[in-house]
Length: 237
Image (tube, rainbow, N blue to C red; front, side, top):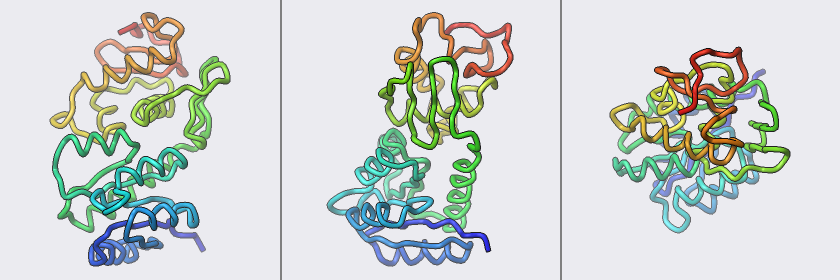
């Protein structure tokens, strides 16, 4: 019998935990429940769930801090819940490594679909490591190394690099990167958000950022990680 994915739900409102748990269990998931940040961290360490759902506004250790600790120590995907519909909160959560977010009140049906989508994206990466010359991206360890030395990347920088590397040889548009890495649509984000992070990645990875060899620009399309066939339209930003 196939083992069903386990989801940890952490929220200081027992009724909300119960509602989410019922929806997930009905959809075939196993559920772990926690009612504050400390309990959530303990359950992550002891039970190693497949995904964590975190309420941002928990007392004591809030969801942002739990997310930061989970993503700094594991590759477990995180979905944040918030009562605020503010861009700053969304960006903060995603920069800390969250995979998605939902604003209360929300549809439990939509939540289940998002959980399924996150887990599906997580499992798509069948190749644990991608290499390009001296650059190595280890998906299982959530680590990038250059000449065998770890590269210090922010969560957003790593997510952007991992997304490009997982699609090595394919040109990805800035809209696609905005949606996949930031989980934002074009009316929520901008091309400049992507360009700034690409610039920062190149500063950390490229021997000559002005003539990039790992992350190339495809004129009129977007960006491509070196790994596929040469493209005559590739050029530096």
